[in-house]
Image (cartoon, rainbow, N blue to C red; front, top):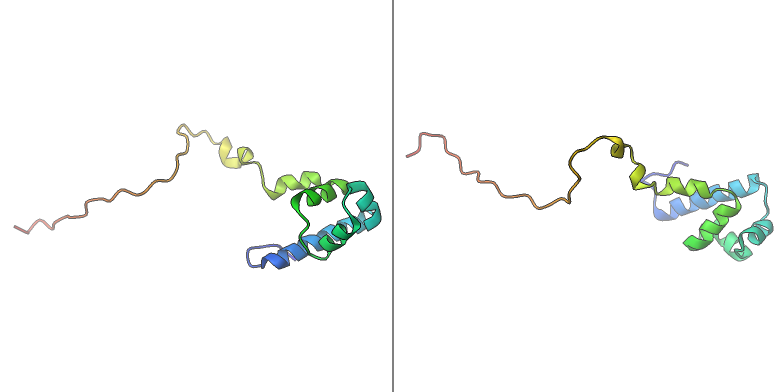
Length: 112
Protein backbone atom coordinates (compact mmCIF):
# COMPACT_ATOMS: atom_id res chain seq x y z
CA UNK A 1 0.00 0.00 0.00
CA UNK A 2 1.25 3.47 -0.85
CA UNK A 3 1.21 5.95 2.03
CA UNK A 4 -0.47 9.19 1.01
CA UNK A 5 -2.65 11.98 2.39
CA UNK A 6 -5.85 10.01 1.75
CA UNK A 7 -5.03 7.47 4.48
CA UNK A 8 -6.15 7.82 8.06
CA UNK A 9 -3.48 7.97 10.79
CA UNK A 10 -4.35 4.48 11.99
CA UNK A 11 -3.96 3.03 8.48
CA UNK A 12 -0.56 4.71 8.09
CA UNK A 13 0.58 3.34 11.46
CA UNK A 14 -0.60 -0.14 10.49
CA UNK A 15 1.22 0.04 7.14
CA UNK A 16 4.46 1.16 8.79
CA UNK A 17 4.25 -1.58 11.39
CA UNK A 18 3.62 -4.22 8.70
CA UNK A 19 6.59 -2.95 6.68
CA UNK A 20 8.76 -3.12 9.78
CA UNK A 21 7.65 -6.69 10.45
CA UNK A 22 8.50 -7.66 6.87
CA UNK A 23 11.98 -6.15 7.26
CA UNK A 24 12.49 -8.03 10.54
CA UNK A 25 11.47 -11.34 9.00
CA UNK A 26 13.61 -10.76 5.90
CA UNK A 27 16.61 -9.73 8.04
CA UNK A 28 16.09 -12.63 9.36
CA UNK A 29 15.52 -11.97 13.05
CA UNK A 30 13.02 -13.26 15.58
CA UNK A 31 11.21 -10.91 17.94
CA UNK A 32 13.29 -12.30 20.79
CA UNK A 33 16.55 -11.65 18.95
CA UNK A 34 15.37 -8.15 18.08
CA UNK A 35 14.41 -7.50 21.71
CA UNK A 36 17.87 -8.56 22.87
CA UNK A 37 19.70 -6.53 20.22
CA UNK A 38 17.59 -3.37 20.55
CA UNK A 39 17.02 -3.49 24.32
CA UNK A 40 13.29 -3.05 23.68
CA UNK A 41 10.90 -5.45 25.39
CA UNK A 42 9.31 -8.31 23.51
CA UNK A 43 5.85 -6.97 24.36
CA UNK A 44 6.69 -3.55 22.91
CA UNK A 45 7.87 -5.16 19.67
CA UNK A 46 4.68 -7.24 19.47
CA UNK A 47 2.53 -4.14 20.08
CA UNK A 48 4.41 -2.19 17.41
CA UNK A 49 4.04 -4.96 14.84
CA UNK A 50 0.30 -4.93 15.58
CA UNK A 51 0.03 -1.20 14.89
CA UNK A 52 0.19 0.27 18.41
CA UNK A 53 2.19 3.30 19.52
CA UNK A 54 5.55 2.55 21.12
CA UNK A 55 7.29 5.90 21.47
CA UNK A 56 9.91 7.51 19.31
CA UNK A 57 12.97 6.30 21.22
CA UNK A 58 11.83 2.69 21.06
CA UNK A 59 11.17 3.07 17.34
CA UNK A 60 14.68 4.46 16.83
CA UNK A 61 16.18 1.55 18.80
CA UNK A 62 14.27 -0.96 16.69
CA UNK A 63 15.27 0.68 13.42
CA UNK A 64 18.92 0.75 14.49
CA UNK A 65 18.78 -2.95 15.37
CA UNK A 66 17.66 -3.72 11.80
CA UNK A 67 20.22 -1.30 10.29
CA UNK A 68 17.46 1.02 9.08
CA UNK A 69 18.54 4.17 10.94
CA UNK A 70 19.77 5.81 7.73
CA UNK A 71 16.20 5.64 6.41
CA UNK A 72 15.17 8.04 9.18
CA UNK A 73 16.81 10.82 7.19
CA UNK A 74 14.14 10.36 4.53
CA UNK A 75 11.36 10.72 7.10
CA UNK A 76 12.08 14.40 7.72
CA UNK A 77 14.78 15.57 5.31
CA UNK A 78 17.37 18.12 6.38
CA UNK A 79 16.02 21.54 5.33
CA UNK A 80 19.58 22.71 4.56
CA UNK A 81 19.86 20.09 1.82
CA UNK A 82 16.80 21.09 -0.21
CA UNK A 83 17.34 21.56 -3.95
CA UNK A 84 16.11 25.14 -3.69
CA UNK A 85 19.05 25.96 -1.41
CA UNK A 86 21.46 25.42 -4.30
CA UNK A 87 19.92 28.23 -6.32
CA UNK A 88 21.82 31.48 -5.88
CA UNK A 89 19.35 33.80 -4.20
CA UNK A 90 20.75 37.22 -3.38
CA UNK A 91 17.98 38.14 -0.95
CA UNK A 92 17.31 36.04 2.12
CA UNK A 93 13.78 34.77 2.64
CA UNK A 94 11.60 36.78 4.98
CA UNK A 95 8.57 35.91 7.00
CA UNK A 96 5.25 36.39 5.31
CA UNK A 97 3.54 39.56 6.44
CA UNK A 98 0.08 41.00 6.19
CA UNK A 99 -0.83 42.44 2.84
CA UNK A 100 -1.09 46.17 2.69
CA UNK A 101 -4.42 47.57 1.59
CA UNK A 102 -4.20 49.38 -1.70
CA UNK A 103 -6.23 52.37 -2.72
CA UNK A 104 -8.62 51.07 -5.38
CA UNK A 105 -10.62 54.29 -5.71
CA UNK A 106 -10.06 54.83 -9.40
CA UNK A 107 -12.29 56.79 -11.70
CA UNK A 108 -13.32 56.43 -15.31
CA UNK A 109 -12.26 59.97 -16.01
CA UNK A 110 -15.68 61.33 -17.02
CA UNK A 111 -16.81 62.00 -13.44
CA UNK A 112 -16.86 65.51 -12.11
